[in-house]
Image (tube, rainbow, N blue to C red; front, top):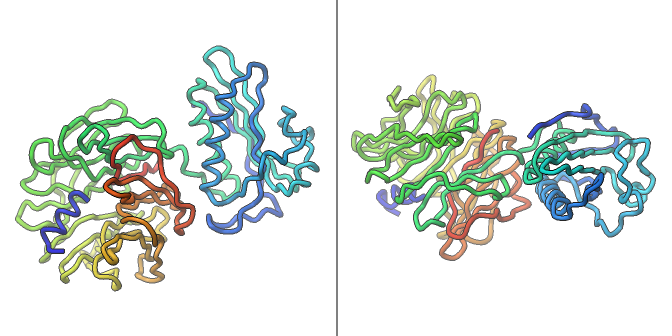
Length: 433
């Protein structure tokens, strides 16, 4: 692929109340996703009075999907449940833990809900079966339509109780979708539900990135005929074109502080990396080398960048120390490595590598060691981004003439598709909160 082709590729390229402090179960060992899963019984929530089967089903399905993706637990078939599953008891002294031990369950989730007009109160509890005690309990209040978010929030708390780190399920994703006939920017829940189009440019839009606080997005748009950089406030809908330098204004990424942006500009004829303020003022030119420098991604501390450059002849990953200005090559294998993403926990850098005409996902340590291939089969997998807890990865996969969004665990296991509107969906981003 020539340098022009490389450029084209890159361009197209509820109220919560905590009822218990998590208690560590002495004989439950939780490891990383992909490790040995702990048997869990997920009991369908029971009504206090009025029955809403659709609400119960939605709650159960969301919890099941989130917990299954986590890789931390293995869910026991509800057909095996005994009579305790039909008892609306949520205290340790009233639960028949012996029944659950007979089924092999080490963890138990039970819940109860109360409907009063347009108000929903939902109580959910996670128990350690072996030690007969509550690990965490949450009460949620809101509208019945908010039950999906309540379920996501409880799944986050389950992960916190089991691992010490909150899960990423009550966050959002952004992506580019062709549903309207043009490539426009959408946001949705992390599982793809509740999609909402937030641009109506009628022209090519690409490369979204969430601000660290999650309330704004950067993206590039050809609305005015040039690939310009825009900033969008999600809740107010306010939008501003913040960089319209001649040529490229692409692949922008917020710094961890949210006060600066790294992006590629070609204002001087060559594609180089720059630091820019949120008002579009250039703070510093970061690279000045032959070749194309693009796709920056900040380290969690904001002191380094990983980026793509073809300065040595083919696209490779490089590291830039923002204090010293020193650059070093990161990838030494493969002839075409692109779209890096630095993990929030500073442990890994994701990227795509072209192999026999197909892109697959890899990860490598920031020191260049321990390179691992994560995907192997199917169509090209590109533009991977991390969940805020570094335990999951979202990416786009080519499927025939269309692209779809996928999610997997950080080690490449648990791959599954994400619900999106009809059309081709690509260039995902994952909010950090």
